[in-house]
Image (cartoon, rainbow, N blue to C red; front, side, top):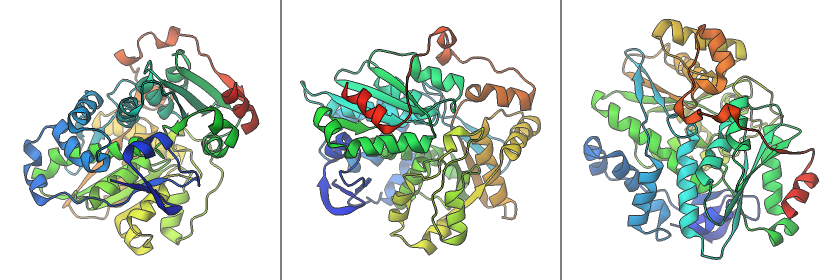
Length: 430
């Protein structure tokens, strides 16, 4: 498999090369030269396959010869070593919980897969610095996934005072090869700093850089696993399957669409967002207009210029009619989000957090006028403990601290602070 830049089709890199670069020199995202199609026999036998075998079958065409099959199998086994519960709430509504990994966020899968792939491809004397911008959960997942891996340093950028205390603790209390930097600004500013660092000659002359955001193919591609895992459980019901995805940088939704392009029988996708509604507006009007992000209680979706949407457009060959045929988009306010958290708890005895609540709202809005042939799944992307104050206020309950977070509240947070790119550059060079 070869990868090219979405800004320059002449570029041709292997999986390992694209993984290490993270972003093309022209700021283009890497994209697979071809999208493989899975045979019908795969879907006929999927219900009897293990999750690890399913994941291996899906991902190996994208890896090519960069990683041998036995090593890739071990990487998958190490990545998917926790559960993905599918919870039935009503006749036609399920939620797929993706937050039972070490940092209680869906991003554990991508971060763990990437860290193990990157570690395998490094030469003995090679050292690499991983840059990652986070609006909440990415930082913790990447920090945990890369912790203590030889030859790899991690720099996490996050918007100051705009992530929850627990989220911040997950990447500011580790030390060792993990460095945290708070930015006076928004997630979009953090993401811009990462992209600008890749374009800076001085930095790249001094450091070997890659990115662990979902712009990196090794973070983006394994998110397809969720959709296949869910299909394995629901295929026997023989209904039209729709997914509602809480969307910020659109990597998760993009991977689901890629899974469909490979042949996974998904009927429709819902891009559920907060008031940062660049994509829902585009789906309604055909005009894509990035804007400054606005702060909400669903902070992982506070993104005003989502990086991965360009990949979604490419999957549909920039055909707007095909895109809106496959994706619907809805936005919801903080008030609506809080009400949904309360409603889910009191109606179904189910506890979710703001991002899951928004995904539920999007699913409800889409299927309210549809027939019963639809089977809707909304993705639960973070444990409710990460948004404890909001969730406890709406459910009037106390959330117990999960085992994964034991001892974290007593650890000291440590982070540097920067106001602009030059200050960030100075830290990297020193």
